[in-house]
Image 1: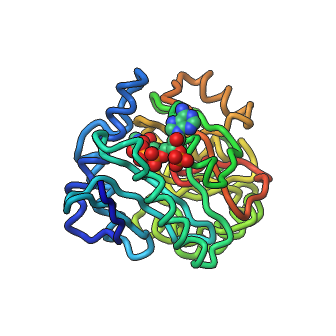
Image 2: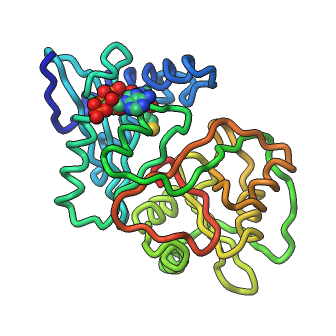
Image 3: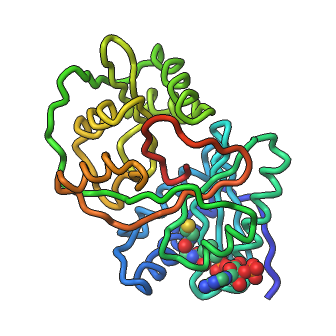
Length: 285
Ligand SMILES: CC(C)(COP(=O)(O)OP(=O)(O)OC[C@H]1O[C@@H](n2cnc3c(N)ncnc32)[C@H](O)[C@@H]1OP(=O)(O)O)[C@@H](O)C(=O)NCCC(=O)NCCS
């Protein structure tokens, strides 16, 4: 089977979306886990959005003129992030995933971005092996938490919609905690109305682009993060990602009735520093 890799174009979204749904659904069924994407549309909509996004790079693999897989690289921040990658279940385990990863790595190496990351579904031995062979290291494990809203009040912590005037403070906070910024995502969240900041003692001490699997949050303290989580009323599956090393926040989520959907691993290559603060990663990093 001859396989070629090319940049994704708009019309690829239907087939790439179907394959993304099938690949993740088959994998979940094989392991007895719930589906990450409940429907084909739930997988296809983000694929279409990513193909059309000017700062997200898409790749498809083709065999005999038929799409057999796709891969994406988010280039909105200092750090680039891979995902989702998915291969047609009928064509897996034949080197196509490696081809698509090699192509993304090649672009990353020439991009000047100091680091590349992804979040890997921990129960999948094949992807863990593939990414490790490519030079990526596991840095942290996350629990995807879902469940009913936590209706707790956090006195002294005011959560409000983020405005364009808050963007620089969000960047500064992200830099303090992670050593890099995620300005592109922050500005998109402010524009879409999803962004929130938390103020404590008159300062911005946390922000979220949305408490959700696809978005990220950063805070100085767990109390500021709790305020952001409590303000959000929607923890639908797969849920938001909580670092297991944040014992206090993880236990608090469990104590408030949230449930674990699955575990995921942060994998990185290039620039990485241990976070100095609290964070909830997106599905990218
Ligand atoms: C993960 C995925 C993209 C990998 O693509 P693929 O085409 O199936 O995988 P490949 O054949 O290219 O590569 C698999 C590699 O892992 C190795 N591998 C597979 N299972 C392994 C195991 N249990 N232990 C050790 N190594 C293993 C293979 O030998 C191969 O290594 P090589 O490149 O050095 O030969 C694909 O299986 C997929 O779409 N899965 C469902 C969706 C998914 O999980 N996406 C990733 C989410 S993080």
